[in-house]
Length: 65
Image 1 (spheres, helix red, strand yellow):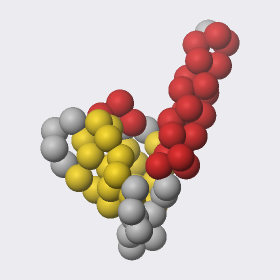
Image 2 (cartoon, one colour):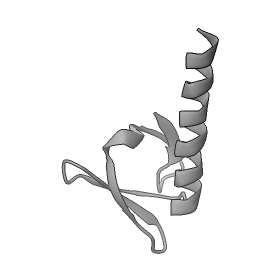
Image 3 (cartoon, helix red, strand yellow):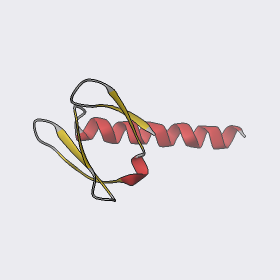
């Protein structure tokens, strides 16, 4: 899961594998595979970087075990 900021400023933890699309605007709207839409403060490029970093950490854990 990745940590994002909701519009209220509170942390949201999102399963990145369930993200279908992201729409950029004044806020970013994340669209999930089930049709749920959540607006967040993070920009799409920031979200993408968080996903990449999360996957890299998972790979590092697999290598160590």
